[in-house]
Image (cartoon, rainbow, N blue to C red; front, top):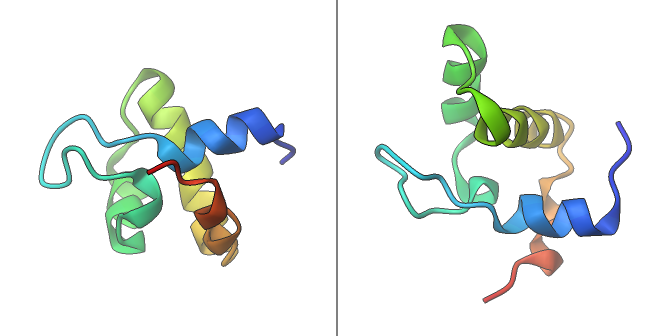
Length: 72
């Protein structure tokens, strides 16, 4: 998996658009939330792709690399 810096910035700042974690950055959602979606099925479109990518990063313990890219 290879990402450009621009894509990583987008991924680090992408916010959940619905549900319990609406408005929260994917980066800060618990890994268990991604595990549930991995088992039940990812949302369609860009959200699903970003969630899959974040799940892979979290599973590999690499999400801390994204923290400096968060835009406040």
